[in-house]
Image 1 (tube, rainbow, N blue to C red):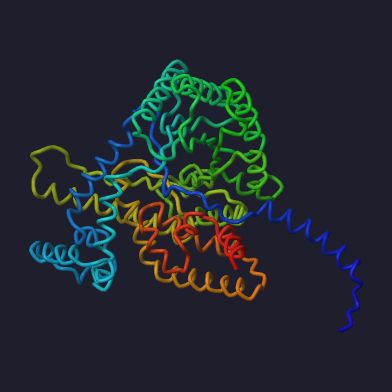
Image 2 (cartoon, rainbow, N blue to C red):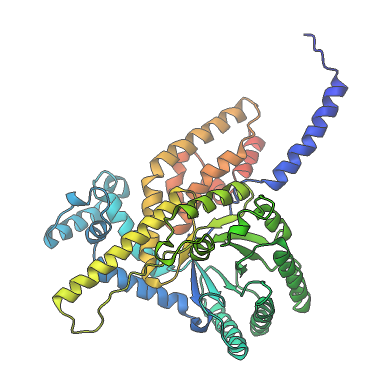
Length: 477
């Protein structure tokens, strides 16, 4: 066999290409396998208590049982496909529930009503066990502009409540604060609240932060705002003897200038680089962003086309970087208009109609986010939590079989490559497929055992890394 390219010349060229490939892989490592919460609840710092997340779960569960006492009522309220085939009479619904409850998981999936039933049961359990996955103690829009002495006192009080919640194990698995933006008029207030809150918290806990603690910097428009926060983090870490790099941040996409700068470029990657590895997520601010586009209040919704444009631009800019992306919030709160113990039957019906209408809006917005690849969003009220999980569970369970087939096929291809000693270097695609199941497991939509049909082992699934799975299989071939 005769080749025209000299070996040394080829190797020199390929070594140069290797450097470029490795630089690219460093910038775009692919989807991060770490757990991403399905939502963030933003709550005013003045209202935060050590048991806030527990109380929100209790309220959300009561809300679910009040306005959808069974899975048929929920399917009908959301007008899910096929809900018209479900029984109408309470006795028939009770018999169907009893039947489904008595079936094995495999047998239940053969029943037409299994999806509605399973989603409802999982919502109820989630609200009881872990209603809030992520909570942001909000000193910005959820708190407002107040006198300095009031915000100072609130920062100290909220930090003490968080410390108490850490001790009582009543906080969410992900938690953090949102400070005021580093705009010229609010930067001093944002820094002061950050310092007061963290100093108080670390004094109360003996220098320990909650797991997955993060600082949200809102209304970012230029990289210098992020750089300043990083420098402040360094000062705080030194002052409190924290390991360098401990403090993490998030940024918010809520101004047109973060989508396109004055030179017609998307600045998001430069903003992420300015964090020097500390930025873990970018959250979309629906209402500030639509306002910055000149959309009037009546039409500022998650369904507006300008939001989809911003979402796609964010995806294009930050895809495969490992930065978690979150959609915004639905501002239609499913709260009944009539209160009290002595409301009329007509008012009771109005309450149900109002809640169900808001549920459908929230469910639709969340499904829209999921379909477009945004697996996290905001919630503002415990009454929104049932629909957050209704949409999330429906999305994952209804897509389970297709995703299972794709990942199973991918794993089989990887296994063949291992056996034949071929190179199979497509770990990023495999990670993307695996992440669907990891997200579904994390939120309670499916169990680890339900992923075994892909051909992966429990140990491989728990590694959360398709690259490690490939490496492990290569070592044992």
